[in-house]
Image 1 (cartoon, rainbow, N blue to C red):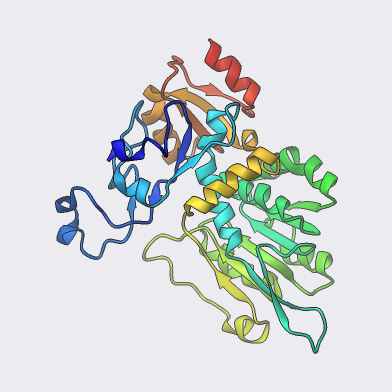
Image 2 (cartoon, rainbow, N blue to C red):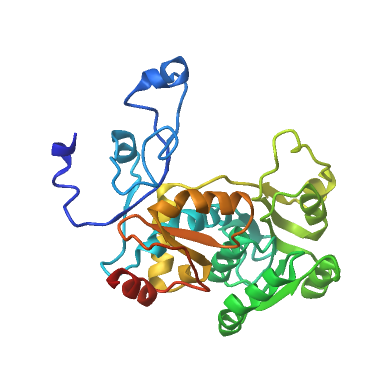
Length: 331
């Protein structure tokens, strides 16, 4: 197949791989249950080879599904390109938000996709993915953005990473620890008791989801981004808010090639700064240790592996810029 793609891909070009391949299996169908019948989606690093390797073979499924996305420029950092996939999950999630608005009572309803511009957004959970949600949410320019977490260090990190940018955009950024401050009271003060326009639950917590229902306003979107464990995913839900407040409840898992392309575009424009989310740097030999650290919750942020640059030791960093990468790769 490679010979047929010489006019489409060229040596030296750089691409990001969308690992969620929205295409049925083409090769090795005997490896799938029932010969792959009924399988509509495969994944790089799972059912397809790839990742955590110095070289990988891009199989036909990934090409057919458009899962190779060009890196915006030759100077675009490898590490930032690597983060486009997790950030794209947040882009996808927020793209699922739909608001129906009327300019006048007798006027037709119009659809606004994404977070409501000039509205009030709440992000519950300020871990690595929650902070990515904050980063993406700021690109929608809400009037106010409240971020909640039980860990004070995470809230301080949100203020450090996004405080100046929020101020520049005119976004009222507030961090809230629900253990000591009533989040619902803060939302009421921000909205004059009308409720938030967008609420994103970026943590896998039954209690967080149930509490979030009390934060939404009329016509709001409640986004269940943090998944619950199987067997623990049945929760209490107030159907009255869906009926009387006419809210939308949505969720998403992963993204599409478009989401990665959009993420790369936002990064290139400076509307998302990937360097804020990187806290560990290592090489391919550190991959297993990184996985152990993630499982043990010893990393609050993202770890980047450079398969083509042996480093000897894991480096802890506060951020990782294009300049940092350039100097690192020279050594």
